[in-house]
Length: 127
Image (cartoon, rainbow, N blue to C red):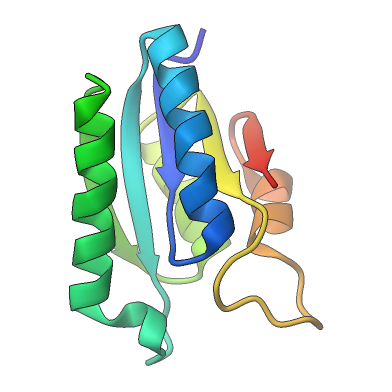
């Protein structure tokens, strides 16, 4: 049912915890994973390329160890819009993401909430 899964990762604990759910579902559905990291337009710590590359490499190793085909994508922009654009571009069947982003301000709508509103496919949000 879910041939291609988009897994959006950042430095938040929720995103890292969601990885196990993504791997379990991908194994169960014989899916491939598109691993996405979104670089925001600001110049925050979350955009440190060395940290991002280490996170992507570590995550891809876990996915590879589970025997799941995986493609890494890095894009720049507003996370919710980029996630939905990539989902559309790669014709994914499901987006999996954590409930909170690392740069979430209390007075702004969460990235997960915005993705749910804009997504071209189902979204699984892991607390």
